[in-house]
Image (cartoon, rainbow, N blue to C red; front, side, top):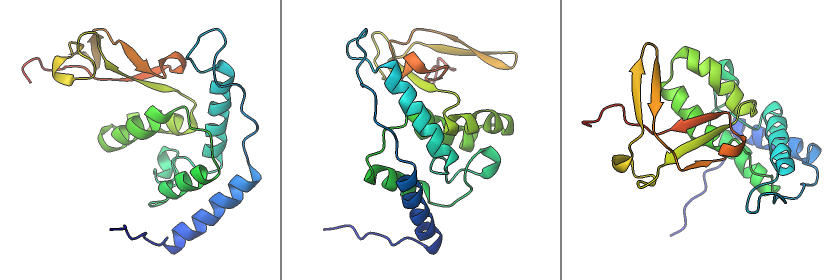
Length: 187
């Protein structure tokens, strides 16, 4: 059974036309080599810089964070990010390097963060000014939360982390990390 494709609203159709025009006039340049010569299996620094520049350019063009409120650096639109993503995919856009922040961090902070956290972090996540990584996996536990041992203890006005993470997705290029940690040993 095929799924019926929902037609764009007038706002979405206008935005789709904008995205197509913008992408036609702002194509990314040729990509540098993906693989690092000095670190086999790793992305090269030149390719990472290429991705960062592309995400920043797309953000400035209004194709990143479309549905986030303008007060947090977004476009203030409704249900338009999926259109931007479709159009980026249509032209074979390079992947955004701050994917962890875009898919997990920004939405979590928007939903659960204080006003300060929203204003402080979301614009820089969207613009790729600050790179984020995820720190979930642990030795002897993988990404299984009940088996993890990293703890977060609230002291004063912040959490103090104690533990080890084995693998941090995009950790080489990030300055901030989304971490899973236990705050209650009995839970």
